[in-house]
Image 1 (cartoon, rainbow, N blue to C red):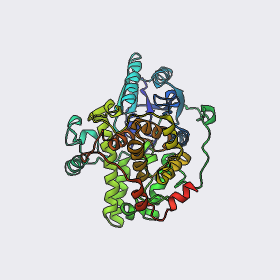
Image 2: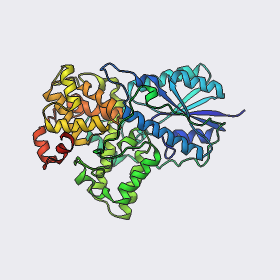
Image 3: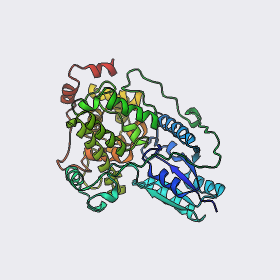
Image 4: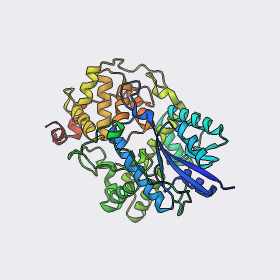
Length: 430
């Protein structure tokens, strides 16, 4: 009897270093790659924002198109559906006579709840769900402590993993994928899904195009093309231009590239040129990314609570819609905050320095419920990642990981330090 399986793609839209895809291919006679766009992501959530905005949705559709092309080069293709995964995956399992679904392991509460619903629905059809961790630099099983014992202080976590944990080898891309005939990919337009097509802004730091091909192209350019990696630590707090930082976050968020692949390429760069503080700092940032994901795994739903997981009272409780709207539109009267918020509104992106400042302003100056800001970022950011976004906002609100207590940013001083000549503010406010 032919063994057929489904590969359920989510935020792992790549063929390289994808254990989920690799395991499915090696243990099945045929695989059916599937992506289900959960219709609930297109609806408003409790804070009045959608789970996904036009910028990220466009990026996701581009990533899906690229993934389909990569799969077809290997003899397969991608089935795309919009709906509820817990209904669509069992339907496809029945249609294709599938006995196993391979999927990426999740850590956030809603994603885990959905996964459980899918598993329950599949089980009724004698079909099992098998999950693999594909999102982190360090595999959860290789950490030098259990998830519940992960330190709540990042530096303690980092020192232990750097000393005692090993980063696994990459998983190669399958050369050939056997699949039944998969129809040509047809994706709906943003308009058909109720979104306005984003207008490209000439002031944007980069034209972000989704897909593994674009992710690899960006890495090749940033590392080996102009060797910007050599100066990453010195330039990462700048605000204008494509190359002050790697800009990998959007591709990482959709899994178009893996942290382990980036790590491997950093090591290759160090061999060819040299290791310095900048090459280490990029790895350091990947470890921060891991940390937020493991914190989400440790604390789950508590990271979405008003008082976070540490039970501290945040500065503000207000949900004043007019104050929130002024912040969103970049009309607060603080020119540094306003410039950053307008960049986010018009491009779906903002520098890390900007994010910290606008979040601190919402929390400490406007005294708004920090979750309103986190929810707006969730809708608007191209590079939204559930663990990093909510972990960072909780951190700045003083209800997450922060051994030094409350972090309040003086936006006037920050503007002087990081936009000394006012060029960034002039770019976005004139």
